[in-house]
Length: 191
Image (cartoon, rainbow, N blue to C red):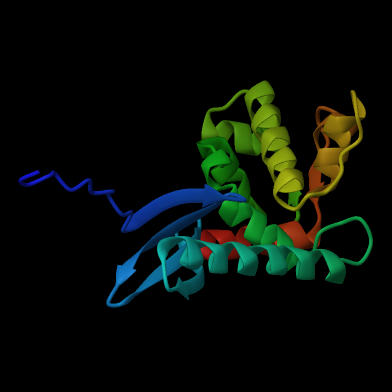
């Protein structure tokens, strides 16, 4: 045998993946590997390892510990301001222009006229309500909060962010959001 070809297996040197709605980016840095986890556009966790999988595992374990810690600190069934702030960052792709107008209106207090948000955003009542329910369900999913089955699901999701919002309020009534959600919305807009 003269020169037999050497089989080379390519080695991954970087990755970009999603875990529990965080964007994980890892790559080779010097002799080791570094990784970062983003919630929206904010870097929340950093990790390292001797190989790519080790760096990603470090991030995933930090994320899991953080979610477990937040859940154990939760008093009652409703999420805290910090949990809602994290959930809004992780659900930033769910924030439509109509919801962005709603979050801006929350900077003036927890009471909002849905008609005012509709006028400013140009969204219909159905669109605004659909987007709000999707955001509330995303918050529940991100924070692993159980929602009732069936038709009570919509009301259960909205109760996570509001005291009187949407389906439980009349057409001309003002929506009232939870103070924790109002504070989280303000923090989200500052980012």
